[in-house]
Image 1 (cartoon, rainbow, N blue to C red):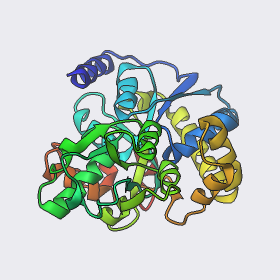
Image 2: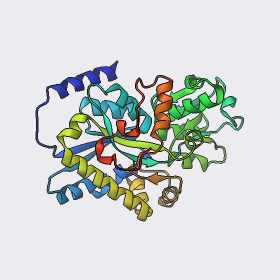
Image 3: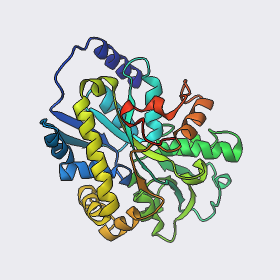
Length: 329
């Protein structure tokens, strides 16, 4: 209900909007973790400010860290943020719900990286081993990226996509990792993301059950960055600056992963060392790129089970035109 009210209010505001000058500040709402590393770099290295100056405009960036995709969506639709960064499947749901009003689309992908389903229960070796006594932590029940991947896995394993939904618990990644490692809570599994999955697997009591890449059949976009049609259309220079800042952040991660790791550990107060985070960034399975990858694998599933009402004809239906020339899929 809250989401529908926010969408309706934003749609009305868009209809009554008149032309205005571009913003002087862009507010990024992001999730925690290495899936959003470019936003950490944009924040710390003032990359928006740098590229805005090159464009001859005055523009600053402010980053709002949040723990759940629903918080990102609420911030964007309520006007508390201009740009959201979360898992790609919560964005796809938002795209579908706002097609006829706020018109939320993605500016770009952020990366392709695997998400692991880890467990501390030695008796769980497949999805069929979960019992009613087990609880699977993920950022938001039925909404988070991990929730969609778990449904895709359940459909493959049981022929029923919602078979494990009743076992899921919404919990921010840092809290879920703490619960799993303690072994003293109801949480016996965590569908997580880097670097939390690496932190958990360092404990010999934890093992990996599956990777999201097992379900998507290989590399696929994990997270993306998105905004409303109104913000995009009213701020073409800001959009250009954001894309330039993301490109530079990607280049830094690729050529100087230690510097990127240092920034992440400092800003996130990460429990892993700089060396450990750097090793994650050097993992060939993790690629920071603006290029959307295997988007239709998500949309085909989400359309089939009714998570979204409209099946896009192409990945380009979900992204603003600035990246349409990229080799997405």
